Image 1 (cartoon, rainbow, N blue to C red):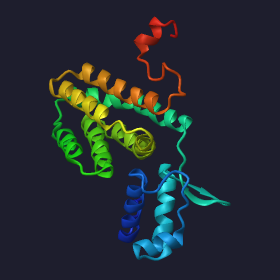
Image 2: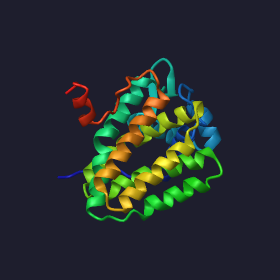
Image 3: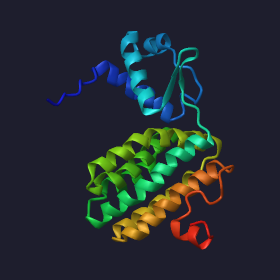
Image 4: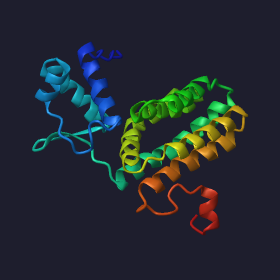
Length: 228
């Protein structure tokens, strides 16, 4: 008999979404302690929904629970970024290729770009950029592939928040987003996938200069360099 997931109580869901929003927009920074009593007071709830929300966020990799340090926002370093973005490089361009080939609507991606351009602050722009990427892969026709990308989506956004705080690169990324969408709308599945691959890889190389220069290089480029 298949078990039915227990719905998250509304208060827990509210606390969960609010903590996540603050982490992904940089209000809660990597390494910052998240104290149950303080958060409960901020949100006007008991400690129980806060505790449950933090457990859920630990499961998604946004926070770390330690017996000695308590709960803290996950630290971001090059190794963490490489692991997360390596998964994106493997899956996201393929998902976009499938989205384009099946002629799925990209209206949501176009709307997200507009919201990003019109955003009044970095928090709203960050949320719009996340929505843009998700709108490219969700219509791929494979729900499992979409869920796999959703699982790393929050961790990728945490990496982005840290990188943007150190070196804002909104304009460059916005231009790359527009080119990706243009190719997708033109029906160029392979071109859109290549542009997305380059976009993801170049972001990591810019944000973490210590990574190897060939991170995210296309397989064809690796063969030419004798690395196959």
